[in-house]
Image 1: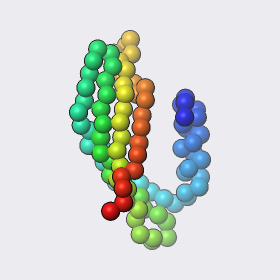
Image 2 (image 1 turned 120 degrees about the vertical axis):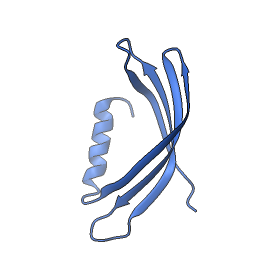
Image 3 (image 1 turned 90 degrees about the vertical axis):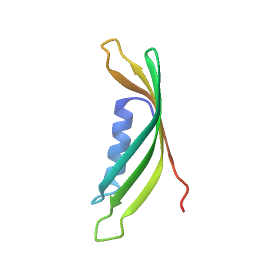
Length: 90
């Protein structure tokens, strides 16, 4: 997906298909931040708990994230690339 409008449309599409679901926990523990000039990268381990509607059992998910960031001319860091993957179910 490229562009804010595309990403926003995708997120809204997912939300319309999941009415009543609520994120109860979202934790990301980042590791190994590397900076080289105006570029940086980091990876993290993610843990999420989502509560479905109607008292169903919570959905627990774990996975990984990797980010590539760039420092803009104004000094602000922006995400240029992002990758997520799900951890194997145990």
